[in-house]
Length: 277
Image 1: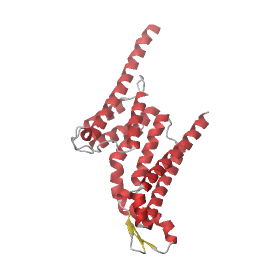
Image 2 (image 1 turned 180 degrees about the vertical axis):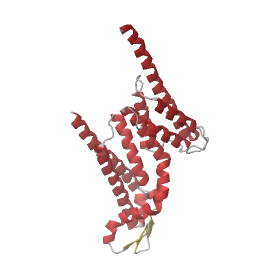
Image 3 (image 1 turned 45 degrees about the horizontal axis):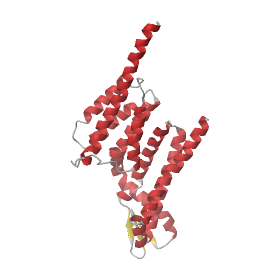
């Protein structure tokens, strides 16, 4: 019995190495189609290059997660099928095909048997939201979302009678006005904040649970408030607009956004570690 058990263990270990290798190859292909054309100055890339800290962090987190698969078999037949279909989608020349491929693979892996497989799936879905689905959703919501964000920014100015709210525009009595454009919305920052949380959780091997969701909701609320405060400050005068939009205030704004993401995450990670001790 002992002699026959050793070959079985060896044959069981071999597919596990194939699991890690297959998923790594698929991810390399997907990110190659996303970032490769611009990196080679060929044009036509879906995104170009990782344009933010969350994207770079996500690429690294996926690499670490897949490496942690080890030599054990972690993927089932359904996972292999989803990865195969996703790889075929990469053949399509459309710029959205990598995001769709990551969506197909992510939807399957996010419900995998093991936590690290589910982590890889969530990261794939996160990338697809950053690349495609988030923008599509925002385009549909923008006519309602932009006036709502403008109204939120107008709240502290409502106590000053010299300001007036009109749709996505805040007007001052001196004729100066600020229009909240899609690029000024907090929506993309909330998507990237959530994605950055997924990546950080993957690095620390923290599973997604109710505690993570609560702290993430607080983090997103902070991001929205910081963005609204910036819009309110820009609406007060042209000098303030230049400072917070193009000057040193933009640096402060970026720092506050990063703090809004990292401080709640740190508090969540500390509480999670304490609960495990």
